[in-house]
Length: 323
Image (cartoon, rainbow, N blue to C red; front, side, top):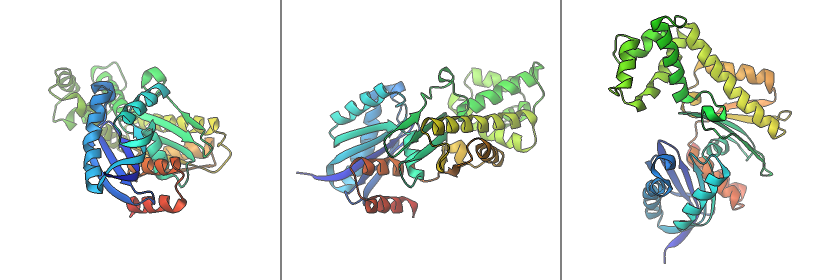
């Protein structure tokens, strides 16, 4: 008969999966990392097979075979029906007695907040925002891209930069240094050459995200178009945060606004300053903070919240990841 641990924490994003096995007192018994979680591309069971590799590794290291509770923060869990579907699939894996599934943005929020209260905006490949209160109320967005009203994210910024650069190069749009800096990043002489290389996939589609840092560098050099795109991203981040704060009746209370994901965690000076300036005018009580802690910490803390673990257990888990 194998041993039972307290919580299995899972943070599964598009690019990687992190898991942690916790004892009931919050001690981290084992961790493991696996590949990305993409149920929309591979199907739920195949996506969970990838998670299973990391879970098996962590269980083996911890010397356990199951847990009391699974706290899973998963990419692409954007609607309640998706959370329910994924929870049922996780339950069938028999890794834990009870299961709670949330969107992976909640992991960023909980990792950065001292209590389950606040708003988090995550800007990585895409952009998303969630908010929560200790009483269980949440605010969230579908976060499916343009069809759900979103703008931004690393992928979206790269697409916008390409659009402006292409139009500048052929004369349809305003001049911008992006017409030179984008193709130069790949060692190409012109936007025409870059467009052809992307079309023929001589440059893999996944490499388009490399253009986002080029956009920020071009903005730092003073380019008007690049600066306008960075400023618009600041507007989008603050718009999402302000709406979430309003929905949760937190606009008039001092509340953490956690900023996470690769684009925001990079702390680009213009973007960072723009977000803070806009928050100061639209949500003066908001306390912006960049989150650099591992998101699986957030999944672990949410799991401890779920099982009613004492504050000491949460402190022990946080100390493992922050020291």
